Length: 174
Length: 174
Image (tube, rainbow over all chains, first blue to last red; front, side):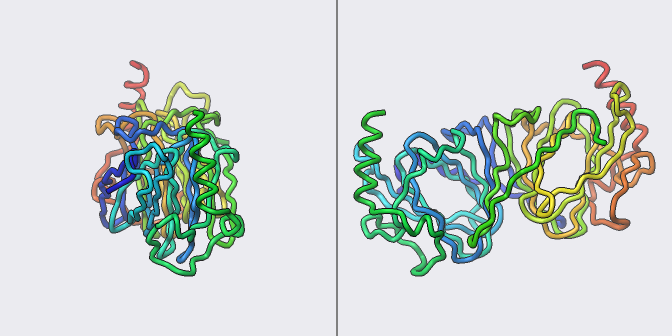
């Protein structure tokens, strides 16, 4: 089961003797995100990025090289899947794109050197970059790691319950 | 010097202890391409893809991993840079995005295992996939290789002069 509004689209890599070609995105696909910005991120093995949540923008995430575990938690009190936590595998063995709507907290854990490429529905805005500690027990994400490498900024993020109050107050006002 | 309409935009990778983050595209950047599709392509070392040319669609190309030499040749008789050939390096040492307009023939040579990510202004259309032999002397691209690995399809492409006639007849009609 996935948080409401999270969409997974299977991708279709074509391998030949030269390498692998993969369509990541078509605007005609129903993904619930109209990208205005695309980013590429390289990560070493055992890196965890997050946990983050957005009030306004949606993300559409792909992993054309390597492997990522995407941890998700539905923070929206009014959601039909409020409180749901899950882990989705993306990458070479599971070529998919995932749309993550506002109010769904998310983090990425990489078991090998990986590249993820993602689109956002609004240009980057530091005011829409909220987060909490990846290992807050209330998040309930079953991470496949215990001591990942996390940035100083992500390691200093606050508690899940404080974030949930803030996110739901903002979503109620929107 | 670049073929008229080819744009190079410097990208700004941010490296930290986890990896590298790079903005590939913002719709607010002036790139002369409004993407409707994004693709990712992995290539082994010594692979050459192309040479291709399009009548309708523009490409916007980035190389978030590895290194590519992008060969370009302006096939448009009516262009201010008609006949110009050049080679542009993209990748880890030269993080840039390149827009390639219709009528500019292009191919990609990879000196190491690489990933390129590119956007197109129209969804993929086999009728807009024309090409010629990468090593046709009239192309005049100073490839840094003599025996690249090329797909059977690309190896069977025809002559530059025949392609040039076809492309210009079509562009004149457009």
